[in-house]
Image 1 (spheres, rainbow, N blue to C red):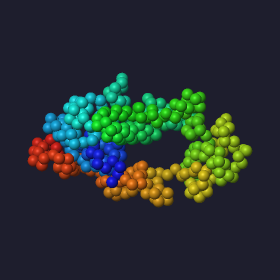
Image 2: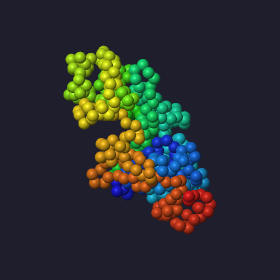
Image 3: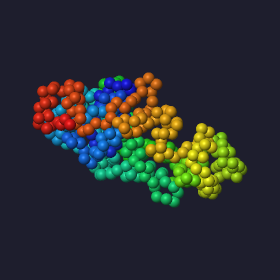
Image 4: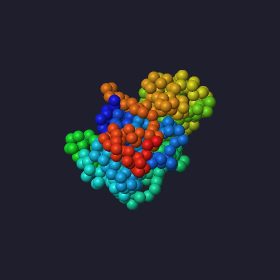
Length: 380
């Protein structure tokens, strides 16, 4: 099942966004083998394995990559793989004897993915950082927040997940498609600072056209009264995004306001209009506003919490969320009419599938037993 069925991919387990890449590929049907250090990474391990949802969909083996035997074993797996990806600082894989040159020499068709914050080269390549730093340097963070207030970190959605993990998944699939034509592998250098910059492409165009104003003063960044969030009488929030004239007209009609009193593109009056909208939306509860607006063309939605979202009638009807091992989580996306993706299995414990997976990947049973005895690999 899934459009990537038949592809065999090795994930060198690490921190950050690389596990999100692996989840996306596994959700789409690829056989992703997670190679974890013995005992797993104590800094990322969840108390309850089932809640480590980024680890869903794939089997996990434990291999000590710091041993010659462990590195040799990974190279043997590489010879049977379509792709390998890792999320270490530049140079780490080379020091383990598993850099791109060595792996591509072993398998010239291999797609080798590398995910970092700053990229494989440049003055900051070896510096530590996190999502907030990468989106700051890319310019993306400067776009998020209200006028007159500091930039607001949007969790780790822009740098880690969209600019990093999702960007690497896209790059790997692109390289796998190209390999089918050329028969040659290559290296995919996915940097979060690059990906976050790509996400701000539209704003760069607006900037050069003279339309991009300071943070929080633009049409779709909370500057406008018709594209904003508002508190309701019960302390909840609603979101409206009715910037097209026809949709804006519906918004005003449902609010009982005259268009002549609220000219949409009178930007000088946007702060005033936002105050008046804020006062009006606080007169009813979120549910009352849902009954007035939901399903109309006023571009309205309630702001739901993570625990509320799975129960909304629209999300429930589409099955946007599923339950795996008693943990509610988003289902794979996008959807396919013929080869739809699916969560293949719940998250695995480090080393849970060492013997089983290595056998399936063609490693001799006697050799597996010897590696287990020497603690080069671990079965939990």
